[in-house]
Length: 397
Image 1 (tube, rainbow, N blue to C red):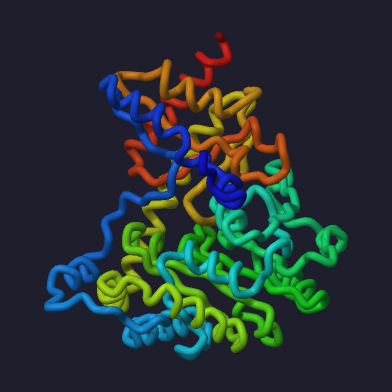
Image 2: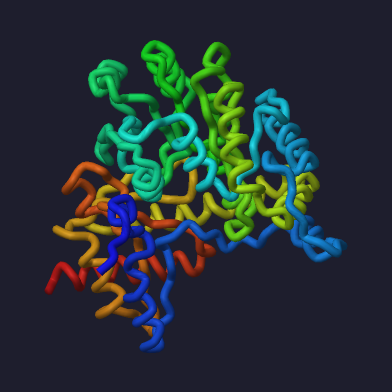
């Protein structure tokens, strides 16, 4: 029997999606499932972007430039200028979603067996990207009890080995909602420069900060141009997850030269989606103000419900649209499956994401689950009621 590669065998299943068969079975039984397991916003994609897509007048959907359409690169330059990040189009390669930006960075910056230090819990698909590229992720554990704070500089440096080639951060963080301030980021930048490491920065959730503070980007700091490689995407900020448009951004000319060669090998990012994304420049600040207020209301609804649950530990997230909760159960995945298979209220149940898959250290996160507050306030209230009552029932069994 012919077998797949060792690399193929090493690719992990997504803990966010692997329980979907249980949700499908619940739906087949006639239940309405509230999906709080995945970061799929229900906010409408902005009208100017949809209008642009509908009005496209072309006879041929042709290849575009490997680095992305110049028109869209120019839009990105002006977008980053609004966030006080000065770039040229040569610093930007448009990618097929933020996912390709991460894979591209791993591929052109790292060799097989190189290690990337990053705080855990972390976005679970980093595991898949690392397995596909032969990169090894080395976790630095952060805890819910310590408000997901980064380890000290001494602890981070102690984890550096001869194989360490990069440090990675997601800010605001998925899955915890932690927002790292300029001081925390500068600490990482100094370590990266001292040890000649890349510093990968996933900034997809830049707009989602509830405290009113300005987002700090690793591109803000002078003197670290050779170290910083940033990944970005329109998926969340414009509720356009299916429009696979991201960006790899760096002032490191060698990285961008290698990334362009990678981009040429895959030909080009999606042409139609880029044309649509050009219209994002027409979207004013009022869109983000309204969007952020909506997500803050959802977050507050989740937190209000969690406050009333006995023995549930959490930290109020300052950013993104996720929260990790530690439940008084031995195995959160069993509880998530039970909610889908054996519990409902008024024909409704809930799907969560077990948090163990967001950790690289075996055994950690087993009693934790992530909530993505991507449903409107009323649906979120119903979903949290189901979780609360379900947890009481589950603990009584």
